[in-house]
Length: 258
Image (tube, rainbow, N blue to C red):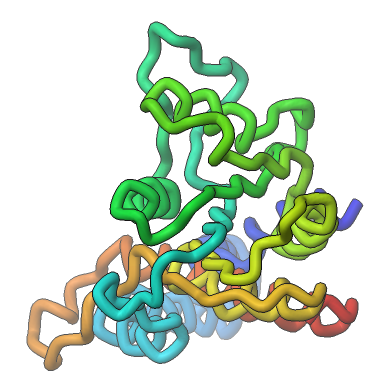
């Protein structure tokens, strides 16, 4: 139930949904005063949430800064890669298809590069199904098949196939690592920069000491110029990601997961 509610919440925290709702009120409410106020508020929200300069400033303040590869204390025993970067849908990829990566695929690509550079000894893929339906699909199992096709040895790939959110990523991974002998001591946690603050706290809560490794960080904010007044869809997406993380942190804190 929590998983389904979290998916519904993603729809409700989208600023674009708020604007469409206000626009609808402005078009269909009977009272002229409320129609006018709805349209005015819709315009204010549009100008604010579509401003890429503002969204970049806030995102830069929230994200975990990236780690330079040259500064890494190599080698790490294990790199944990959190799921959410595959676009599996209903049809699983086969050996004749290219793997369907989504936007956060640098989580995996950087982990593989670190492995090839000798910065990490093994890779742990954490994540099952991110779908309300087709729950039998496991992203990490499919990604393992991809890594085997790319030539990585099976002995260096560990799969946690069942988790469906960040809390379960941490909990199920901790349970899995207890069964591994010898247990890894130096662990790298790889996920998107905006996701790392919540993810790191989840792993700390279950007793795992991890070093955060941020991927896909936002570029440094630039001085304001007139082009920032032009609405950008990317800014709306940025705010949705931030709201998801902020609300996620609050809900996880309420449930004792942080």
